[in-house]
Amino acid sequence: MIRLQNACVRYGEVVALRGVSMHVQPGDRLALVGTNGSGKSTLLRALHGLIDLSQGRREVQGWGPSAQGPAMAMLFQKPFLLNLSVQANLQLALWLRGVPRSLRATRVQEALEKAHLTDCAHRFARALSGGQQQRLALARAWATRPDLLFLDEPTASLDPGAKREVERLITEFAAEGVTVVMSTHNLGQVKRLATRVAYLEAGQVKVDCDVDAFFNGPLPPEAAQFMRGELI
Ligand code: ADP
Ligand code: MG
Image 1 (tube, rainbow, N blue to C red):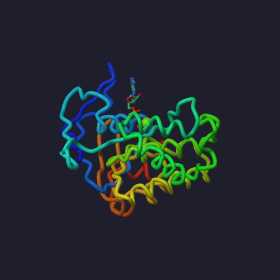
Image 2 (image 1 turned 180 degrees about the horizontal axis):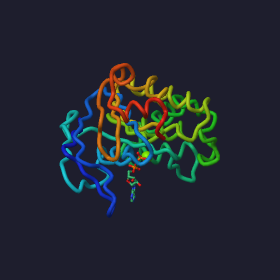
Image 3 (image 1 turned 135 degrees about the horizontal axis):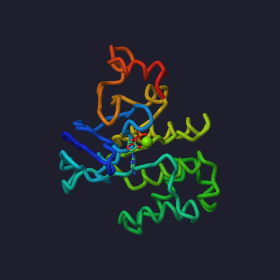
Image 4 (image 1 turned 90 degrees about the vertical axis):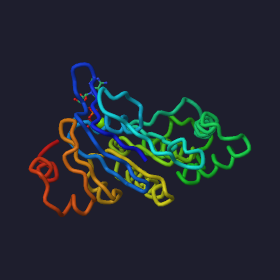
């Protein structure tokens, strides 16, 4: 769906990605792991096309009937919700994506049910708990029918119960055929959700393999240290 070739990203003096070549295939559930500052968020943004590459190329495969490339959505660690009702946040996202009015009400209901938020439809989104807000943000992304969903540490600030609920949603969306690329610090979450893992170190992808190989196979020294919890 997306391919980066020798991608470099700089923020002024800081080089955040150094010559990354990787691809995202349909059906992937790809987890990006690595220490803080290793470049996970930057790689998500680069794959999504939200930032310019200072070197290298980003290619998008034709997709769907119009061959315009995959529909994409991104979710951040802190959900970005408008100071409106839960329902209005969903409606607005659908309107912005050009979903016809006749389809919007049904899509909103589906999204509310999916996220177990039907009872909260008329509450202010920002008054919900952290876990409910993240579920809303996920359901809002899902309601726009993305082919490809990017998640940047989607459960980092949640308690265990809320984490499980968000993981349930991610699993359901992936089972419906949404391709998922997510960054996470949580290796348990990688085991539960991912089919493929990319390990980053100082802006480079050092390991890119399927999840079994990542947990059972030999790894380069720093990746092994990361796995043992010796690097943060
Ligand atoms: P991660 O998500 O793995 O923690 P990031 O992609 O956020 O890593 O950051 C990679 C590197 O780029 C880090 O050194 C970070 O400090 C730097 N960086 C990230 N965003 C910016 C920015 N907006 N301006 C300057 N430096 C940044
Ligand atoms: Mg990050």
